[in-house]
Length: 186
Image 1 (spheres, rainbow, N blue to C red):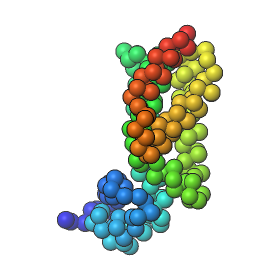
Image 2: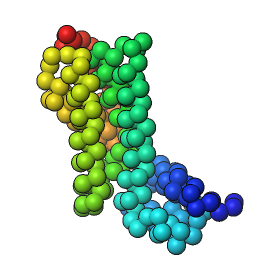
Image 3: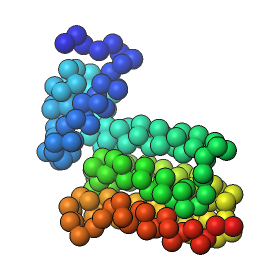
Image 4: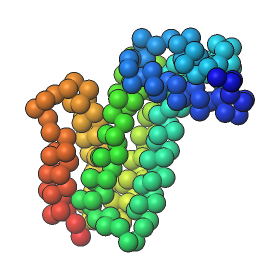
C-alpha cells in the first residue's frame, strides 16, 4: 500500500483507529498499532497526534460534526415531521448509533484524560444548546431540562448496551419515550 499524502493522513489514521477500536479497547491499542494499521510511520503518526486521546477525540468529533450537520438539516426541513416526539427519537437514535466509540470516549475522559474530558464537556454544551433551541421552537416545556434529559438518556442507553444488558430493549425504550412525549407538544 502506498503511503498516504500529507493532507490525507489524518483521515487514514482515524479510520485505522476506528477499525482497531471495533475489536478492542483504546488501552489495548498502542500508537504503534495505529500507525501500522494506517500504513504510516510512527513519526508521521506522532507529527499529527501526540496521544491516543487526541486521536479518539478527533474520531468522535468527526462523527459529532456529521451528527450536528444532519440534525440542523433535518430540523430545518419543513417537509419533515420534527415534532417533539420525533425530535427526541431522532436525537437518541443518532446519539446511540456509535455506542462503542462513545463508550471509549467516555471511559478515557473518566480515566483521567483531562484534555479529552474538557473537549467532551465543551461538545456536550454545544449539543445541549442546539437541541434546547430546537425544542424551544416546538414546545412550551423546559427546553433546557429536556435537552439535558435527552443527552443523559442517550448516555444511559450507551452504558446499558456496553454492559450487554439483555433485559434492556433499546428500540422499545426509544419508541415508548417518543409515545410518552406526544403529550408535551404545543
